[in-house]
Amino acid sequence: MATSRRRLQPNSNLVQKCFEEDGFSQTFKNLLSSLPKAKGWLSPHLYNYEGFWLTALHLQGTLFFQHNFQSQESDILLVTSPKSGTIWLKAMVFTLINRMQYPVLSQEHPLLTSNPHDLVPFLELEYAQEKYPIPQKDSSLTSPRLYSTHLPYVSLPESVKNTKSKIIYMCRNPRDIFVSLWHYISKLRSQESEMIPFDEAFHMFSNGFTMAGPFWDHVLSYWEKSCEMPQKVLFLKYEEVKEQPLSHLRRLAEFLDCPFSLEEEERGLVDEIIKLCSFDNLSNLEVNKSGKTLFGNDNGVFFRKGEAGDWKNHLTDEMVHRLNQITEDKFKGSGLKL
Ligand code: PAP
Image (cartoon, rainbow, N blue to C red; front, side, top):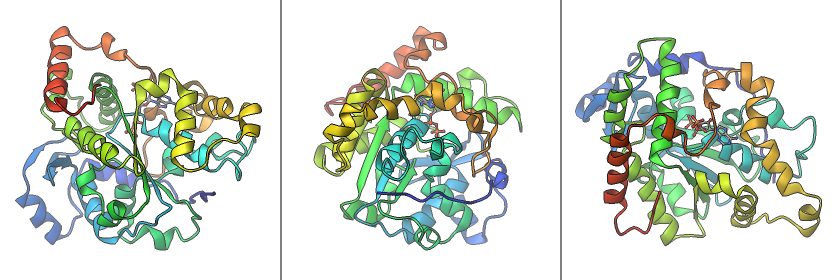
């Protein structure tokens, strides 16, 4: 099992493009003008496509992704709503499935010199950037191909839904997601424009106006699929992985049909992977302190606190009550609790 590393150059234009909406074809602009529109967090607007809010750039990538991507049975797709621990999940799964090719304690391990976002590409961003089918470009990728997306289940290409490829979904409680998102966007906006006031951002988030939101609908769509097709969709919770990382890593390995052998268990490999991918380790690596992702963001913006429960330091009682209420209403009868 091996996934080749990518050798693209950082594309700072991609981040810049989030702040703009020019440079699109007239046909695409016509589509945008026909869609419901809301205020964006980084981009001027979010557009409602298939029931979820996307930036123009993500929507363009989504359309290319939907029409061009051919899934393979062995593909692994990591899915999250933004700020659910995507980078952590990418680090763990990349390390897990490539443990033969890249020994975890090796000084040459890719995680020591690359941000996990560069090792596991976001498909909708890749397509937004380059506009041609990823498999052609990535013919060097060997099986299994490891990809990620923030898209809701409804927007995945049919070939992803209809093959035996695996989906791993990680969710996080909406209180921490909102706090994480606000800090992240504030850092990015501080380079370009004014911050969105905390109250206004809360209003946007709780009303569903967020990238790939409404958050609750996103989570629910994958939760339902994980109940219907547990062999295809594995549903993880950030907080539970934080609490019991070893048992969740073993669960991931079983799900991906690459369980740890007795020998690996005995030499402590599970623990080594958890340590390599831990917040403390990744956030202190030079690449994550000073580098940039291939899509142009400072790597550091993806590492803030890495804790469960930081919302207690930021949200008012009223805000907590509102988020809890929405969560209860939306998830009623689903069996899902966050
Ligand atoms: P993205 O959706 O923009 O890719 P994502 O990686 O999902 O972001 O989320 C970032 C969050 O994961 C940050 O949370 P915080 O703001 O509450 O701190 C980030 O700190 C956290 N994070 C990053 N790396 C790890 C890790 N190794 N373990 C746990 N949490 C992590």
